[in-house]
Picture (cartoon, rainbow, N blue to C red):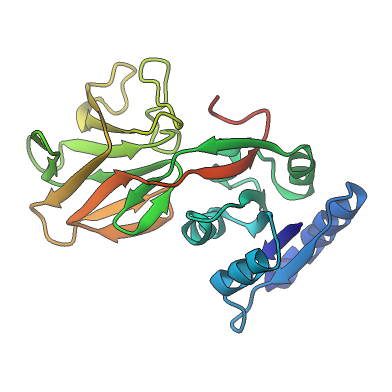
Length: 250
């Protein structure tokens, strides 16, 4: 059973034609299901949990990257498959998963290629790709040792599961989203625009992030902004997600 959740911002009139095409295409492909349009009276968490109690096995969010990020943090510990229909081509998560925008995404949902991948966790917030902190005097505490950036405004520190949004998933630095580890990458800001980035690379399961500057922020999947100090770790559960053939990982 499919549950399609339309994020509340899609109630704006400019999205009507796009949603109409999406719903018609789902019917044509034979994968129609229950459609819920969120509003101030319908909470995403309640809708998802009610659907699972009623036997839903696949949850598809229609919206943007923020919509996907919100729903990951609801279903991370639940046995369901997650899909996304990006409402427009600005979705970086859609590009990462190989899911085209608008009604073209319906074919990807119908093909139902499912990958089971790791999730990262910053504090209590799950992420699929990466978390990044910049321009701070950062101290990273692992069990065996500590890592400190040299001085403020000299480094970008990223914690990577896929490493696409953070820009570190290259042939020189392979990041595996199924190995049970996250990849810590520290990059010298002076080399960020260079092909030969000066990087330090460590694989880890859990660490603590502290910053000398009060109110330092970690940006998660380019959507959420969380304060430090905090912990970053590999999540215990994994995510089953619908992907396309043009996804940016194996």
